[in-house]
Length: 111
Length: 112
Image 1 (cartoon, rainbow over the protein chains, first blue to last red):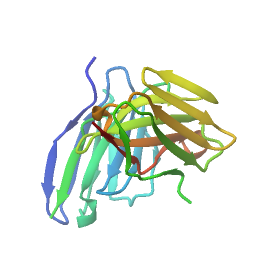
Image 2 (tube, helix red, strand yellow):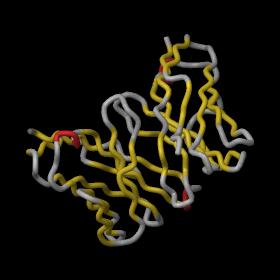
Image 3 (cartoon, rainbow over the protein chains, first blue to last red):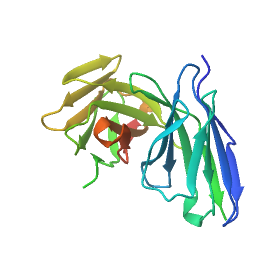
Image 4 (cartoon, rainbow over the protein chains, first blue to last red):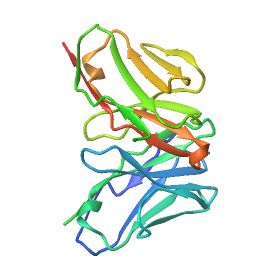
């Protein structure tokens, strides 16, 4: 069974640009969570998608957005990048028993 | 008050000893509890989940949950150097829209 995949592994952007991060969940999982892990901080919940709909979002500004596609893969978009957006962005595939399985992450660096 | 609190450590134990990691949470309505291991530069890896009061054992790992005290712990028996990592406690509650809250993690070092 393939695990959670994320792309790209690394992404370097300049302030003000837009970043797009992608995630494919475990086959059969319909639910995807996005998290931000900034250096020295814990995982912060960003967004939850299930069955193609946004179900909940964390305490982040609207320039963090995303979507989930019919095949349950998901995309996270970050507009108007700021230096403090530099972090590891993790996608988690969520199963019916509430267990979450993380992808390898995308390291976003904003310069 | 943070939703999930962990002692940041670092916690050092000798090889073969028992490592004890603790976590408290603030939302009494929380239903699901998880322990993850995260190696430096890697993503979190699920170790155990626990949903009801008491102990749950899986190999060298034992999770303990006490909902009355809002306390979750993880015991690692016969600790190995490969167990050296940061351990994250996570809590889930439908009260907050099925949101997951993570602690900042406890750094564990197992000394050979």
